[in-house]
Image 1 (cartoon, rainbow, N blue to C red):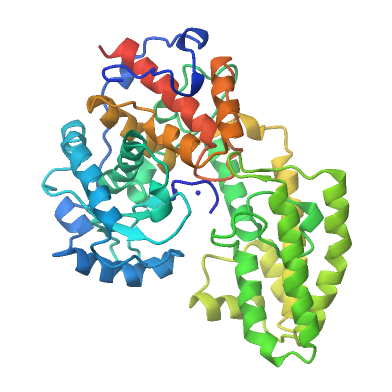
Image 2 (image 1 turned 90 degrees about the horizontal axis):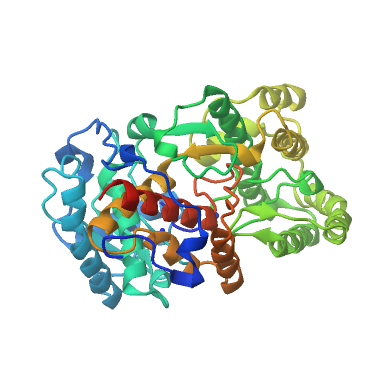
Length: 468
């Protein structure tokens, strides 16, 4: 999990501490819901002894991660013995017995807590992961922390982070087989106060719409942006893995640029791409995954699009390769079947001009995504998916409550350490007023930071009134 937003993956006996200026008496009172009192257990398809990759030493874990992490777009870990490693392991060891108490079946036989690895990176992030290089896939018995995860964080906030990551690792909620047992798609109306995702019925229409959005976003990014659809452009967090089309274009650019008869055009491609990216980043809200383009920004972007397209054509010789052949060369295989648009483009261009083919596909998919996001039959702002990040939040809330800590610690961690002071203040004010924050329009498997805090706040207070 990246705890952060894009790629971005939180009271003793009572939950409603008034952190951040919250005022409990202004929030809607929670209804009694005794269904929440017991954790929802889910089937684990593989025995724990076979599901995890254990390590005889910290150094063995580091060597394993050095090979695995580059395959999942993560930096390699620092050598064992870093000062922050001891701090992280102390946090894990403190919370681990409580985790086993709350989830005894899921942790059966896992007597020793997982190891901690440290990555030199200022980004506020930590993660547990699975290793899909082997089949059946296994979970490495460690949690990785960026050095930036510790900057300015309180011990209680860090316990929230640890609880969230242990939720991923111990309940294996990245596993497709496990996820199928708990994932829920649903639609909300009204104030949403009594609605908890894990307890909803899965709505097949919402699931279909979510799959359509995922398909398009995997190709061109989180948001349909017709203004930039005529160029492959990943406009958001620079550390996130780029969309499929952008990744293939980058691969082709790096492969064929040395053969270019016009190196100055290649330089212009890089310069203008960066200029467009900077314009988009200025209008991107990383807490809400929203992009708000004013008329001035749209005009500035539009002035760069055609020169960028022309520079790309001049930079690259005509690549007489099909889209699929470059994909297979980069990835070693086709990552799933081509859709109808891609198959039609393959037939139309027949390996005569890769650049023209990918530019056409990129524009087509941006337009399709923008149209899908604008549909009113299933309004995006009303759609919800309960999946691994919210699941890990809820798991951590139960464990932290049992541990005598604030169940909302993971979302407080994000608000204190990832969000701007202004965004955090606005979030606390919105919750005080009883408003439901923006969920995120299914743009990422992380709901927005403020919604996560609102969700944990009402979940924790409902546990307090229902589960004495």
